[in-house]
Length: 226
Image 1: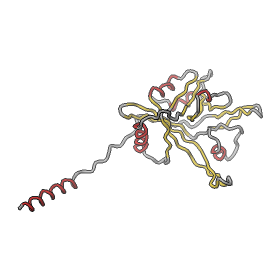
Image 2 (image 1 turned 60 degrees about the vertical axis):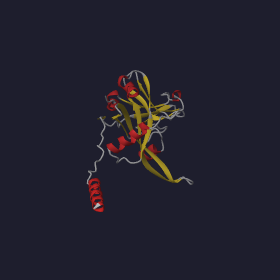
Image 3 (image 1 turned 90 degrees about the vertical axis):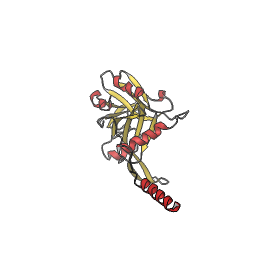
Image 4 (image 1 turned 30 degrees about the horizontal axis):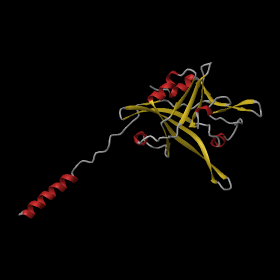
Protein backbone atom coordinates (compact mmCIF):
# COMPACT_ATOMS: atom_id res chain seq x y z
CA UNK A 1 0.00 0.00 0.00
CA UNK A 2 2.81 2.36 0.94
CA UNK A 3 4.64 1.56 -2.30
CA UNK A 4 1.50 2.28 -4.29
CA UNK A 5 0.99 5.57 -2.48
CA UNK A 6 4.62 6.62 -3.04
CA UNK A 7 4.33 5.70 -6.70
CA UNK A 8 1.21 7.85 -7.09
CA UNK A 9 2.79 10.82 -5.30
CA UNK A 10 6.00 10.52 -7.31
CA UNK A 11 4.08 10.27 -10.57
CA UNK A 12 1.99 13.31 -9.65
CA UNK A 13 5.08 15.38 -8.85
CA UNK A 14 6.76 14.31 -12.07
CA UNK A 15 3.70 15.23 -14.11
CA UNK A 16 3.41 18.56 -12.30
CA UNK A 17 7.06 19.45 -13.01
CA UNK A 18 6.96 18.40 -16.66
CA UNK A 19 3.65 20.18 -17.14
CA UNK A 20 5.02 23.51 -15.97
CA UNK A 21 4.94 26.12 -18.69
CA UNK A 22 8.27 27.20 -20.15
CA UNK A 23 8.25 31.00 -20.07
CA UNK A 24 10.72 33.07 -22.06
CA UNK A 25 12.08 36.34 -20.72
CA UNK A 26 10.24 39.37 -22.14
CA UNK A 27 11.84 40.93 -25.23
CA UNK A 28 13.50 44.28 -24.68
CA UNK A 29 13.60 47.23 -27.04
CA UNK A 30 15.27 50.63 -27.11
CA UNK A 31 13.28 53.56 -25.77
CA UNK A 32 14.25 55.94 -28.59
CA UNK A 33 16.27 55.41 -31.77
CA UNK A 34 17.73 58.29 -33.79
CA UNK A 35 18.08 58.52 -37.55
CA UNK A 36 21.44 57.45 -38.94
CA UNK A 37 24.00 60.19 -39.49
CA UNK A 38 25.89 59.26 -42.66
CA UNK A 39 27.30 62.41 -44.23
CA UNK A 40 30.22 64.55 -43.07
CA UNK A 41 33.35 66.03 -44.59
CA UNK A 42 36.67 64.87 -43.22
CA UNK A 43 39.36 67.59 -43.20
CA UNK A 44 43.11 67.06 -42.87
CA UNK A 45 45.80 69.74 -43.10
CA UNK A 46 48.62 68.37 -45.26
CA UNK A 47 51.69 70.31 -44.12
CA UNK A 48 53.80 69.17 -47.08
CA UNK A 49 51.27 70.46 -49.58
CA UNK A 50 50.30 73.38 -47.38
CA UNK A 51 46.60 72.80 -47.97
CA UNK A 52 43.50 71.26 -46.44
CA UNK A 53 42.41 67.91 -47.92
CA UNK A 54 38.75 66.94 -47.82
CA UNK A 55 37.11 63.52 -48.18
CA UNK A 56 33.60 62.27 -47.44
CA UNK A 57 33.41 60.53 -44.03
CA UNK A 58 37.19 60.13 -44.02
CA UNK A 59 40.15 62.04 -42.57
CA UNK A 60 43.14 61.36 -44.81
CA UNK A 61 46.25 63.24 -45.92
CA UNK A 62 45.44 62.56 -49.58
CA UNK A 63 42.40 63.24 -51.73
CA UNK A 64 40.71 59.91 -52.46
CA UNK A 65 39.26 59.78 -55.96
CA UNK A 66 38.85 56.01 -56.39
CA UNK A 67 38.72 52.69 -54.46
CA UNK A 68 37.38 54.64 -51.51
CA UNK A 69 36.65 51.69 -49.21
CA UNK A 70 40.22 50.41 -49.61
CA UNK A 71 41.73 53.71 -48.49
CA UNK A 72 39.12 54.24 -45.77
CA UNK A 73 39.82 50.80 -44.31
CA UNK A 74 43.45 51.81 -43.80
CA UNK A 75 42.57 54.98 -41.88
CA UNK A 76 41.28 54.96 -38.32
CA UNK A 77 39.31 58.17 -38.80
CA UNK A 78 36.48 57.06 -41.03
CA UNK A 79 32.85 56.18 -40.52
CA UNK A 80 29.91 54.72 -42.40
CA UNK A 81 27.16 55.71 -40.00
CA UNK A 82 26.56 57.01 -36.47
CA UNK A 83 23.33 56.41 -34.60
CA UNK A 84 22.09 56.94 -31.04
CA UNK A 85 19.82 54.59 -29.11
CA UNK A 86 18.38 55.18 -25.63
CA UNK A 87 17.84 52.33 -23.19
CA UNK A 88 16.57 51.84 -19.67
CA UNK A 89 18.59 49.70 -17.26
CA UNK A 90 17.77 49.34 -13.56
CA UNK A 91 15.54 52.43 -13.72
CA UNK A 92 18.37 54.52 -15.19
CA UNK A 93 18.57 55.85 -18.74
CA UNK A 94 21.71 55.37 -20.83
CA UNK A 95 22.60 56.46 -24.35
CA UNK A 96 24.41 54.15 -26.76
CA UNK A 97 26.17 55.60 -29.78
CA UNK A 98 26.51 53.01 -32.55
CA UNK A 99 29.51 53.64 -34.81
CA UNK A 100 30.03 51.68 -38.00
CA UNK A 101 33.31 52.12 -39.90
CA UNK A 102 35.60 50.44 -42.39
CA UNK A 103 38.64 48.51 -41.25
CA UNK A 104 40.93 45.93 -42.76
CA UNK A 105 43.67 43.41 -42.20
CA UNK A 106 46.27 41.45 -44.13
CA UNK A 107 45.33 37.84 -44.70
CA UNK A 108 49.08 37.13 -44.68
CA UNK A 109 50.48 39.75 -42.27
CA UNK A 110 54.07 38.47 -42.34
CA UNK A 111 54.39 39.44 -45.98
CA UNK A 112 51.66 42.11 -45.87
CA UNK A 113 49.67 40.43 -48.61
CA UNK A 114 45.95 40.22 -49.44
CA UNK A 115 44.41 43.24 -47.72
CA UNK A 116 40.89 42.30 -46.66
CA UNK A 117 38.23 44.98 -46.11
CA UNK A 118 35.60 44.52 -43.44
CA UNK A 119 33.54 46.69 -41.10
CA UNK A 120 33.91 47.48 -37.43
CA UNK A 121 30.74 48.00 -35.41
CA UNK A 122 31.13 49.42 -31.92
CA UNK A 123 28.83 50.84 -29.27
CA UNK A 124 29.90 53.63 -26.93
CA UNK A 125 27.77 53.86 -23.81
CA UNK A 126 27.17 57.19 -22.07
CA UNK A 127 25.32 58.18 -18.92
CA UNK A 128 22.35 60.50 -19.34
CA UNK A 129 24.18 63.40 -17.67
CA UNK A 130 27.10 62.96 -20.05
CA UNK A 131 24.98 62.70 -23.18
CA UNK A 132 22.91 65.73 -22.19
CA UNK A 133 25.95 67.91 -22.94
CA UNK A 134 25.30 67.41 -26.64
CA UNK A 135 21.75 68.76 -26.47
CA UNK A 136 22.78 72.33 -25.70
CA UNK A 137 26.16 72.42 -27.35
CA UNK A 138 27.82 75.81 -27.40
CA UNK A 139 31.53 75.88 -28.13
CA UNK A 140 33.51 72.75 -27.38
CA UNK A 141 32.50 69.66 -25.39
CA UNK A 142 33.88 66.19 -24.70
CA UNK A 143 31.64 63.20 -24.00
CA UNK A 144 33.30 60.45 -21.95
CA UNK A 145 31.94 56.94 -22.41
CA UNK A 146 31.32 54.47 -19.59
CA UNK A 147 32.02 51.43 -21.75
CA UNK A 148 32.75 50.37 -25.29
CA UNK A 149 31.12 47.24 -26.69
CA UNK A 150 32.35 45.63 -29.90
CA UNK A 151 29.59 43.95 -31.90
CA UNK A 152 30.71 40.74 -33.53
CA UNK A 153 27.51 40.53 -35.53
CA UNK A 154 25.44 43.34 -37.02
CA UNK A 155 22.52 40.92 -37.16
CA UNK A 156 21.99 40.88 -33.39
CA UNK A 157 18.44 41.82 -32.43
CA UNK A 158 17.76 44.84 -30.22
CA UNK A 159 17.00 42.41 -27.40
CA UNK A 160 20.40 40.72 -27.78
CA UNK A 161 22.25 44.03 -27.93
CA UNK A 162 20.45 45.40 -24.86
CA UNK A 163 21.29 42.23 -22.93
CA UNK A 164 24.97 42.65 -23.82
CA UNK A 165 24.92 46.29 -22.74
CA UNK A 166 23.10 45.39 -19.51
CA UNK A 167 25.71 42.75 -18.71
CA UNK A 168 28.42 45.38 -19.11
CA UNK A 169 26.59 47.88 -16.93
CA UNK A 170 26.14 45.26 -14.21
CA UNK A 171 29.89 44.73 -13.95
CA UNK A 172 31.88 46.50 -11.28
CA UNK A 173 33.59 49.54 -12.76
CA UNK A 174 37.36 49.13 -12.97
CA UNK A 175 39.48 51.39 -10.82
CA UNK A 176 41.31 52.47 -13.96
CA UNK A 177 38.77 52.07 -16.79
CA UNK A 178 39.64 52.59 -20.42
CA UNK A 179 37.83 55.74 -21.45
CA UNK A 180 36.76 56.72 -24.92
CA UNK A 181 36.21 60.36 -25.76
CA UNK A 182 33.84 61.95 -28.27
CA UNK A 183 34.94 65.53 -28.88
CA UNK A 184 32.52 67.95 -30.54
CA UNK A 185 32.69 71.64 -31.32
CA UNK A 186 30.10 74.09 -32.57
CA UNK A 187 31.93 76.53 -34.82
CA UNK A 188 31.19 80.24 -35.12
CA UNK A 189 29.25 79.63 -38.36
CA UNK A 190 27.02 77.08 -36.60
CA UNK A 191 28.55 74.00 -38.22
CA UNK A 192 29.64 71.03 -36.11
CA UNK A 193 33.19 69.72 -35.96
CA UNK A 194 33.96 66.43 -34.29
CA UNK A 195 36.25 63.44 -34.00
CA UNK A 196 34.66 60.00 -33.75
CA UNK A 197 34.84 58.32 -30.32
CA UNK A 198 38.28 56.93 -29.63
CA UNK A 199 40.78 56.19 -26.89
CA UNK A 200 43.19 58.98 -25.91
CA UNK A 201 45.63 59.04 -23.02
CA UNK A 202 44.55 62.58 -22.19
CA UNK A 203 41.83 64.87 -23.46
CA UNK A 204 44.53 67.44 -24.27
CA UNK A 205 45.61 65.19 -27.15
CA UNK A 206 42.30 65.81 -28.89
CA UNK A 207 42.29 68.97 -30.97
CA UNK A 208 40.91 70.30 -34.23
CA UNK A 209 44.04 72.10 -35.33
CA UNK A 210 44.87 69.80 -38.24
CA UNK A 211 42.02 67.32 -38.56
CA UNK A 212 38.31 66.98 -37.92
CA UNK A 213 34.99 65.97 -39.40
CA UNK A 214 32.53 68.72 -40.27
CA UNK A 215 28.78 68.68 -40.83
CA UNK A 216 25.90 71.09 -40.76
CA UNK A 217 24.14 71.36 -37.42
CA UNK A 218 20.88 70.21 -39.04
CA UNK A 219 22.56 67.03 -40.25
CA UNK A 220 24.49 66.29 -37.05
CA UNK A 221 21.47 66.79 -34.81
CA UNK A 222 20.05 63.53 -36.17
CA UNK A 223 21.88 61.76 -33.34
CA UNK A 224 20.59 64.16 -30.66
CA UNK A 225 17.65 62.43 -29.00
CA UNK A 226 15.76 63.07 -25.77
